[in-house]
Structure formats: structure tokens, C-alpha cells
Image (spheres, rainbow, N blue to C red):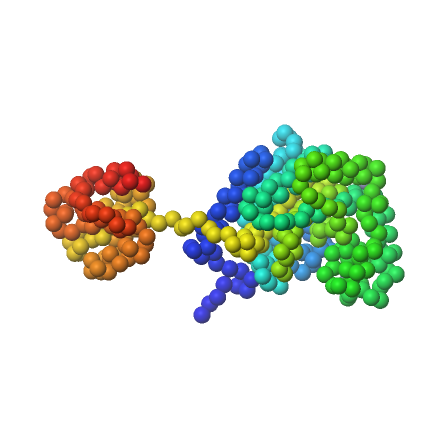
Length: 418
Ligand SMILES: [Zn+2]
Ligand SMILES: [Zn+2]
């Protein structure tokens, strides 16, 4: 027996209504904020993520699906959207479009991670990027869009956590202060953190080890190290967020896992945490486009895991809209009517009427059972007598009297009733 690869799952027909409900809500929100859809390939040159995401991140060090294709090119299944979308921004000269360029994506991503509740190796995200504008109005816009999405989906009680981690002017001195601080606690740190201290001390702030977390609580705070420009950006954003009326708080330990973030970082956390504490987040990446070979170009983005949203929706008692049912189920009586029944079903579908059946080689009883099980509103029954009269029997399956309808009028009769 074959099974789906570990950490990857099928989205079965019964799960599709919830799934598509979610995709539609995301696309609708994006449209309302003026974001246009972009789809990039599932794989990128590995360099895009090495340079974009950062070589010392967990994603790049441990979690990427990287392989050589038959031309010996190193490709990687995308572990996130942002670097790939910035690559597309550069490749297609979007710097000459009106800025910021507002883009969104929905699709699968891949990380070789330990599977757990709501976390998969193939997972899906709704992702937005606003590229080409440094002003904090755009930060507020993206943060607000994310909040509205959760609100409209009915995910109750999320906390909005925000931090500013500075830029290339002020971050080096902050990172140095952080390194000094953690070095003084070296003996108490977990092995991961001891290994990361030299290369990437920021990452120590989001270690999940409880001892590291306690040490991190008293670590230097990035907001105390911001240069004037970063401090003013953060003060302005704070004013906008207050004005939006959405409760928020500064979280000094919030740094996000990826190297490209600058200034604003944020996360939404559901209060009712089970295994996973963050439902979505993002931040500025003002240095990323330059890192990928473009002119210095600011940007900010947000991503939210769709599996995690579904998990939270189910906890909140969300029920998907009922699955689509066929309108008609065509039943053929006797083998000699089968060809006409097949043609009739095809005609109904061409007229836009969701139609199931006929299935040959079964008796009328068996076919009627299938028609009822399909949830169709009508059985369209075609036997030798009906065929000779140029008619079919239209039988309501949820109660009502059957009637005979000329074959050429069946589509109209069904349409009139849908
Ligand atoms: Zn640690
Ligand atoms: Zn700065």
C-alpha cells in the first residue's frame, strides 16, 4: 500500500468546500486592498533562497527540498514566497511600474520539517507583497489586511504583536549588544543557540527552549537601538496602528525566522493556542531586492498558513458551505437507451447544468439509488417508451410529482428550476 509522503496530504472532495471557501476569502481580501495575483514556479534556482532567505536560517540550513535536475542545475522547491516574488519583480522590470507593486499569491510551499498538528511538509500560504515603497502607510495597510482576513473568517481573538528590528545602519550595533549579552549566559543556552550565537544572535530570541526564553526576556531590546530614521518609521507606524483601532502590542522578542527582515516585523497569534502559536505574520525586507541583484528597493509582505487557519476555524466550530450537488442524474432503462442517455447527459452539461450519470450495466433500482445518493434534485429517466415518444421522465428526488417533458425541453425545464 502506497501512502502520501510523510507530512503531505490529499485534499479530498469533502474537504474542498472549506478549502475553496478559504481561498476565495483570501482572494477577495487581496482584491479589496488592490493586490493583484502572481503565480511563480514551484521551484526556483537554489541561489534565490540562499541569497534571499539567508544561509544561516533554519529554512535554508535544514528544511529545503533541494535537488539537481538532469542539467546539473540546483533547484529548490520553494520554502516561501517572498524571495521568489522579488526574483519575479526584478526579472519582469516591475520597478518601472507604479510603486508600490501590490501582489498576492496562494499556493503550496515545501519545508522538510517535523510534521505536527497544522504543520506539514507541503503546506499552503496566502501571501501578499507590497514592493517599492518605504512609507509606513504600507506597513499599516498590510498589517490591517491580515487582521481583517482573520476577522472576516471569524477566527476569534487574535493578538497582534509588532516589533522593529532596525536596518543596516542600526542593526549591527544591536546585534553586537545581543551577542555580548547572550555570551554572558553561554553555559545556560541550548546547543542550538550556542551554535547560532556567533553567526546569528537574533535567532536566539525566538528559541523555543524555556531556559533560552527566560534569558531572552532580559536581552537588549531592538527598539532601544534604532537609528533616528528607523525610530521615526516605527513611531509613525505605531500612530497608524493606534488609529486603526486594532489592539496591538510591542513584542521585543519578535524577530521572525528569516534574515531579510528590516524594521517592521509582526505576527498574529490566536489566543487559543494548540501546538502552533502563530497563525500568520510578516515584515519589511528593505534590503532583499538589492540582495538579489536589484537596485535598493523597499518592500513589505505578509503570509498566513492556510492549514493553520483551517485548524483554527474548525476549533471555532466553522462549518463549510454544503458541497455542490448535481442538478440532474440521468437514468437509462435498458441497454438500447444507453447511447441516447449518454448524449442527453452531455447536452445538459453543455447547457451548464451539473449532471451525473448515466452508468450503464445497472438496473433501474440501482441507478435510482445512485441518483438519490448523489443528492441530485432530479432524476431524468429515459426508457424505450419515453424514447419512442421523444420524451423523458423528470422525477423530483426531494418530493413532488414526476412529469413527462419533451427531450428538447429538458434543459429549459431544469434551468427554469435552478
Ligand atoms: Zn536555545
Ligand atoms: Zn536604523
